[in-house]
Length: 230
Image (cartoon, rainbow, N blue to C red; front, side, top):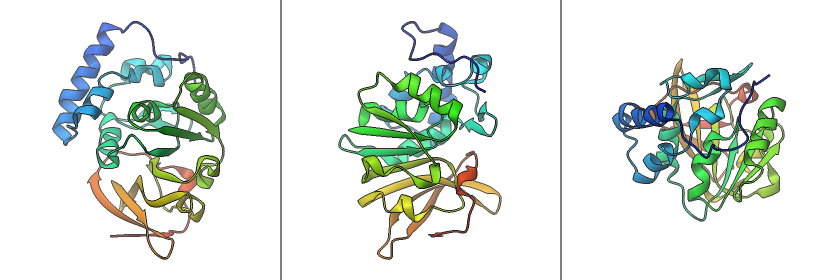
C-alpha cells in the first residue's frame, strides 16, 4: 500500500525540491530534446514529489523510475517530457490517460487541454489519484480495467498510455476520435521505445517509434499484438 501522499499541490514550495526541479529541467529534459516552453514551464512548476510516497520523495527527481506500488512505478521525468513533446497537446483536446497512477501526467496535461480523464485500476493508486484530483476542474479520475479504456468520455482526440504495451486492445482504439493520436511505450527486442499511432482504415493502430526511453511495462497489455510497428 502507498504510504502518505498529500491531497493536493502544497501552497509552499520546499527550496530543495524547487532546486531539484530546476536541475531536472536543465540536466534531464533540455539535454534530451524536451524544449517546448510550455512543457518546460509545467514540468518546472508541478511538484513531482507530491505524486510519490512520502518515504521516497527524495528520489522524485532522479533520472529513473520511482516505485509507487507493488507492480507500478512513476516513469522517469524525461519519459513524460518526451511523451508530452510528441503529444503536442491542444487546448481543445479531450484526453484519456491510461495507467494514470497518482495523477502526475494528468497534472502536466490539464492546463493545456480541454479535459483529462485519468484511468487507474489499482485500488491504492486510484484512492490517491481521486483524492489529489477531486478539486480539479479539468481532471476526472475514473477506476476500471486499463485494457478496457473508458467509454464514458469518448471519443478522445489524444490517448496516452503511461507505460509499455505488447498490444492495444480494440476497445481502446475504438475510443479514439477521427484523426486522434495515441502515445505509448513498447519493447523492441528488449529496447524500450516510445511510439505514436493513429487508427488505420482497418481499425488497427499503426505505431511509429520516435525515441528510446525508460518506460515500465504495463501487465494489463501483455497479450497478442493488434498493431503494426512501422
